[in-house]
Length: 286
Length: 314
Image 1 (tube, one colour):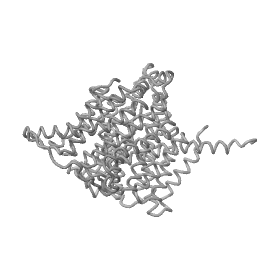
Image 2: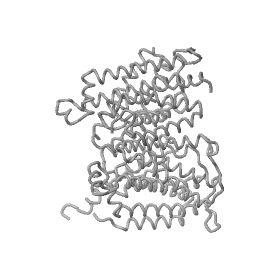
Image 3: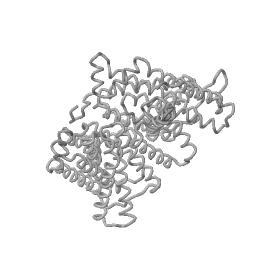
Image 4: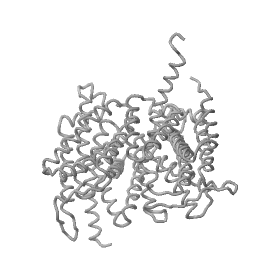
């Protein structure tokens, strides 16, 4: 085990972590408003990857037109789901959670039927590998992680600098008071879910050229996202960031030392350790 | 309204007499239905106290694998395999429950979901546990030297175990313990219960452990019925199937999950040869029930019965 290999693992872990964060942040955002963890999130991530395959590879749209279109479609789906389903179940957390599971099953099974089980590949958009200090990193992953971080920064700006973000934080703090102060909670909830869905789809778009795509990939994504938000503390944006990078590194190191399947088990053990010693998560409050 | 005993007696009689008239195919259906009903009822006992387990299939898989490893790898009698499966699943659930049930329900749901996924990843990671292709040639138990090798004899094992577990979980509702559990459903009433000296976390953990011991035991029997196990048998979709059975049947009464599991399994086994069509139809049924029939099919049955019994003017 040389130092270079260790550095390599660290670099891959940080890059993967940045991509996990993109998906997990949407969950954090929705949790803050609905107090529910959106199970359908992983499937929206998968849908993003599938759509980039359809739009970019099959229809040959330019990338700059494809990305906003996919984000818009995902946001639209999110808005409709909030309107049609989540809003009617507000306050019944068990039913709401089951409903998000139902939505995820519908998206997943429809994708199996429409897209088929065959693995799909999106060709590399940015070929080439960066070599620095003995570490090899494909440009594509680096760019994806960079864009993901920019989007996280943009989300921060929305949540902490805009009026809609202020409204979201107000609802998170105390929904009833927020409503009394004239905040249209329904509208903000719709916005948050739409934004969260768009983020998840973007997460899928960015991993599409890196991994091969199939309708089962959403489950893996949601698993990592859940572990990240538990470790970071539910509803805590900064916690999600830190935990995402942390879990990315733990997983890549684990994969390097123990193998890919065992790395999953290792990540789970880390989650259990956090639940025992710091149940509110790294950054959260109970 | 008082529960009447006769529908229950009719059902049990029908189940007991079934092997005399049914074909092998229908015995297969009956075994699958009984297994699913028992799983759903076990899940219901957790749902009843306001907790949502999204990884019950993980405990089924844990039980199944425990039994298979004990019998195939360590050559222990299948009967001990079944018992060991229940104990291991129950003990694991106790540990996980003790950690997560102090927290809000959502933490429990997420952690158990993660467990369900990881258990399978764990067995897939080690060749000794069969790796990705699993373990075949799982032996079935012998009953006084008579191997339960056909559907008809194996049916009796499944029937006895599932009736036993259902009777147990049913009766537990009406004990002091079962009544206490209902008070833990909301945060406010839980605090009240704790203030009069009820150890809420321990009760909830015990209930979860019992539920998982039941599904672990049935998982062992399930693996013996299939005579193989691999990481694809009990997945997240199994967990959601159980949840759908319970929610569609209705989680306000014990008989809801029974009816939901029975009807949907019959439907699923008959209509769909391809898994994802079944998943799609199940999920659509689930959404319709959640949005427009909050009490599930059971509330529909109650409504029809009420209207029938109280005819206007009658």
